[in-house]
Length: 524
Image (cartoon, rainbow, N blue to C red):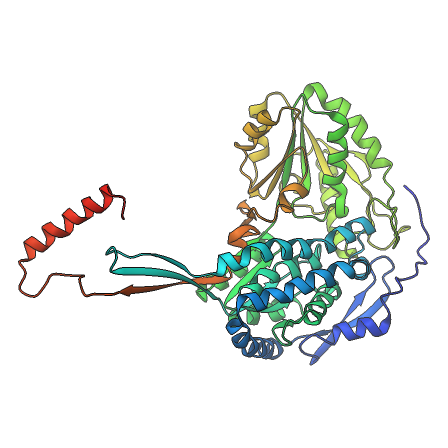
């Protein structure tokens, strides 16, 4: 690994004045501020205001007032805001990447790639939203004399709770279809990574989004989460399964909908005909991209016995040779974990595995010489289900290698988890890989890729099976979930029921005959 001194110069765009301006958008200052620090160095960046429950209620009141006028704005005019925003977001991608890096510690490549997600979401829904939100007229129960129209009404104010691993992509991208559909948004980013989503809100307002429509509150989950859920008309959450259960239960008590994108213990299955060079490159990103802090990243790799040693040698060599360091320019292949606390959690998983018999093929240790929260790319062997990292999401640069004797065994092992968010299958024979994918219990399956192909396919819904979540983002459901379907039905003449004085038996006979006739003629 390439070492670097800790004396870094922050990106020029992240001036103290700019950061203070951004955090000034947070609703509330009645509580002691959160010391938001630069991950690479641990130095204070800015003090982040913390919202009280009363501040959260005030944010919802302001958002709800702005939402009424926004919902009444024609869809074409609403979408014009996002056409302008697309250009603004792309033009300011480097500044966004600067903010992402200082607050999260990820390497430059991953930060730049994260900035691309909101423009991709905008581009997709700019093509689909008008059609999805347009009234749809259908026939009613009585041909010619009745009709029914499906009208999409916005939910109202959507509460979004965004994670720290992709603060800009989730905090902003999840809000975009909600706003296009006519809703207001109250966002709670993670305290550690509030800067980039705050800048996203600023850029949306520069594009013409009405002020007050997109509110931001900050604070620890137990402090502000309950009030946020109790005031929201719908909740979008990305994070751990444990927290997702709490949010889902509270949303259920409030009789509001929610979408929960939760944890994963994602497997990668390599078939015996796979191109090993491509497999190794894919696995390096799958395990160590974003320092392993991706909900869809790979933590388990299953290899046929005939290819295991070949892969192991090449993969471990690549892991040992990764350029891991703190830098605000392109070059490093892996950056820091998000915090010292999270680094300690990752280390505890590795230590537990070693204590129970696992072998460390490379890595396994913190690197304080690189920065406070750096951890080595780690490859384990001999991981079993009695180990923390055998069943629980580690969410760090740690991956376990496993052999399999038959494809049935590999599929059974891949499915032997409470999670089902993502899976990866590698083979030169795409049809054979598709057959494997069909047997995997996973909301996303990537063939000859790790995760980007599925997640970047914005026209297709993406969600999790089992304990990995409820609901989806992307695709038509990714926008329609932020709406309620209103059924407006019209009856032109009073023909529903027997006429005065008509024999009930004759009415029933005629009604049943008409049902058969309409089915035969395919009218209804």
